Amino acid sequence: MQNKRSISFQIIITVIISFAVLFLFFSVLTTELYYRNVTAIMQESQQHSITQLNESFDVFYQQLIYTLIQLSGDSTLKQYLTKVPEDNFEYYQMQRYVHDFLQTYIGFFPNSNVHLILYGENGQTYTTYNETLYLEETGILVEDFVKQAERNHRRLGVSYFHAGLTPYTENDEYMYIAHALYDPYRSKYYGTILIVIDETCFQNLYSDLIQDNNHFSVITEDGLVISDNKSELLNSVDTELLAIAQKNPSGIREYGGEKWIPSAVYNEYFNFHIIQLTKYSAITSKVFPSIIRILELCCIAQFIVIGFLVYLFQKITRPIHRLSIAMQNVSGKDLLLRPEPMQFTGCSEARLLGESFNEMFGKLEYYTKKLIQEQGARHTAELNSLQHQINPHFIYNTLTSIKYLSLAGQRDKVITGINSLTKLLRKTLGDIRETIPLKQELDLLQDYFQIQQLRYGDGIRLNMNIREECMNASVPKFFLQPLVENSIFHGFSTNNPNGTISIYATISNRLLKLEIMDNGVGIPPSILEHIMDVSVENNKDCLTRIGLKNIEDRIKMIYGPDYGLSITSTAGYGTQVVIYLPALYPEGEKNNEESAKDSHN
Image 1 (cartoon, rainbow, N blue to C red):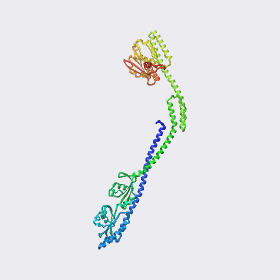
Image 2: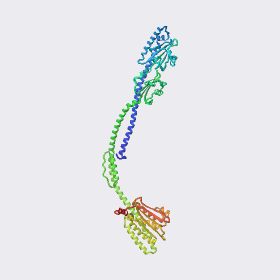
Image 3: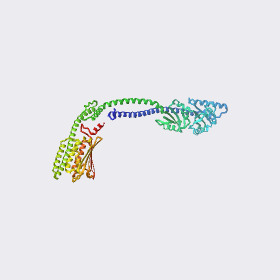
Image 4: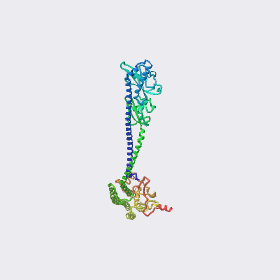
């Protein structure tokens, strides 16, 4: 679990993230569906309530129409509206009779503030008020809604907010319904009926449904609020509320800066809308604790499932984890050291992995040993091949020099040269080491140079400037001879050679640097560019190319690709060969530089 790249960690993290995403998704989905269902249920319940409320308005309207029909068809009432009283006694008698008659119809509207006013062609006014009213003096008879009723006795004239007609009610506003009394036999109107309705009549119909979290309103097609549980909205035009009523939308709507659940119904008798709004926050405040409880239970269940899955995944992946640790331990050790056989339990795949691991490492051990043996044999063969290439090359050049001495008739130098060659071959052919100390390599180089001096004389000089700490450093055997030979053959004239070959050796930062320089004529760029390309054919410098390439290959085979030689040459100034080797010493020896530091300390 501590390794973030392990399969168990990644599986567990994937499971946790997946569960978290699914939990969030289903939480949001469940919450949204829960709220929608609750809203739908609430709206359905509201719609049922408001439908019943609409039926109550219908009953109220039918009571009004029934009253108007009864009053229009009463012959006695018609007589009292057309006949002029002969004296005061008859006047008061008519007033008393009509007042009592009207009171009987007021009984159809219990708990409602409804009054009836009759005005006849005889100029008499009859009311259910307990005070005398002269309707002509109020000016209401000339208002539009009354004139509208007189123009068509089959229609009602309505004024929603009109001041009261009596001194007691003149500061209040009422809804007036006007109906013209028409005599078909005379084709003449003989009176007008006014029904005065207080707004509380409407409010009483839904007062039992009013709560702190809802809002009831009755609004006309013009947006005029004629009844509302908020008195401050009465007699105001609310187009926003009208839009909600006309569309009767489902779901949630914004109104007055709050969210509401609306329900609306249209009353065809009164030609207005009845609206009920319920605060959405009131629903959420009750639903939210239930949702939180459900989410808590789901979260607990999720943690239990995740814990079980973590345990299960760890149990499944534990053999794989053990296998990865075993392979990691093996990779940090010698491949020839075979680990203890792995024993896996659990699923069949894990046991199969364990058996395959044990079998694989057994084969790996066998092939590793075989590969090491083959690489050692190939390495030895390649080095021997390179060494064998140098020996014929060196012998060829040396015998060539002795041949020239013999042709020149210099018998003593020929004998000396043969003796020097015999001595040199004894040192090189009898030594099977790949590397030797630099001081031994320099001794071999001096023996070879003495042979060349027999041919070219003292015109060629060898100057060696070697620091003492470099003498014991290990270098490839017989690798300086081809470089010095290259300087002799390419740097100086064979007829009258004259020049100096200098060898320098220094150690810095555990790196041995060897420089071989001559002050000869230099190497032409065309030859220098391909100086170690042995693929160039028909070239008289083929042996020299083989010798240089041989040195380069031997250095890289022994020390690696980071080491080798580089050749630079300038016409008229000479040639420089620089070789970098690691500063290594034979086992048991110590370089002089470290010895000097120890003695200084």
